[in-house]
Image 1 (tube, helix red, strand yellow):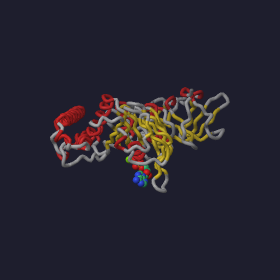
Image 2 (cartoon, helix red, strand yellow):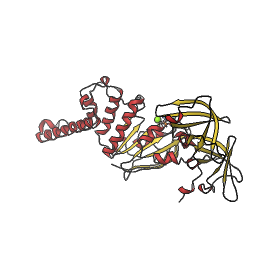
Image 3 (cartoon, helix red, strand yellow):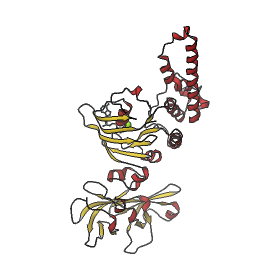
Image 4 (cartoon, rainbow, N blue to C red):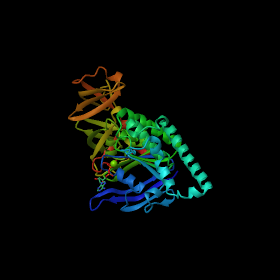
Length: 395
Ligand code: ADP
Ligand code: MG
């Protein structure tokens, strides 16, 4: 097992704009790190540079203690699993799993075995070790019944397991995954996600995983790296990314339905009271909670208030000091255990997610009141998009 460290890693293709811009990332030994971001943000390029399939334009990559910028992919002690798992169609599962290992073995002289019986014994032992490794990997992945099958006789999920198995038998220091589950249907994707998580726990291997799917990132990662336009936006645990997004982009990208955003202004009174005003509402915010020192401008400052859908609750409380919003329900989306209520307040569309039983009486066209849990609200500087730090989080 090994650590992986990227220092100021950049990549430009030809004369085009940089695909990856000065990425710093330290992956701990045995950690499961997920790179997530919209299509084209540089995730695959970053992973391919770690694998050695792309040269760096700038920076260094180390695996363990060794800088690997000039080390060939085969000598980096990594194994990569791709979205299109590319199994050898004419080989059965067992042969697909053992192919890489046998090929390495075949580089050594075959002729020697004809004259040298101790070498023949050595070769047999090597072959037996490969068989053991293949069978143990198949067992780990629950495909031991499929070893004799051809790839065309497998389902998508089974093929993906074989692709993971091919990485597993090599027992690499670092596993790299590039959207390995994207070809699977939603149900199977969920199952495979759980299996990968269990596999990671069993192996305690260093894994770096790329996906555009924030839900996949949230469910798999020890730590998430959110990227946009080749730039790292935030590196943190799933809980922290969700609760304390570093900026508006991260807040909007992570979480479904996305965080509600209300543009307004913030004023602070002499006694420290903060007031948030927007077209649809005005609230007093817990004043000692925010650190405004980094906020641009003075007086009434442009900010965006962010609130997660599950922190926007249906309420009957109409009292003036509660942070409430009254609007018209335009849609309800029911998922069984919970429901999303979409409502419009002064032209702004907001979503509340609530347990199903609280929403049974809500109908489209109703006027309804929602209360905002201001202790869970986020503030973003409208100019920079950066989150305004909460005091409890400082120091
Ligand atoms: P992601 O995996 O996040 O979708 P990529 O790393 O594949 O993004 O691509 C990042 C950017 O680099 C994109 O703008 C893409 O068009 C560009 N790019 C990727 N590969 C190449 C290449 N071989 N030649 C030129 N541009 C490339
Ligand atoms: Mg990609």
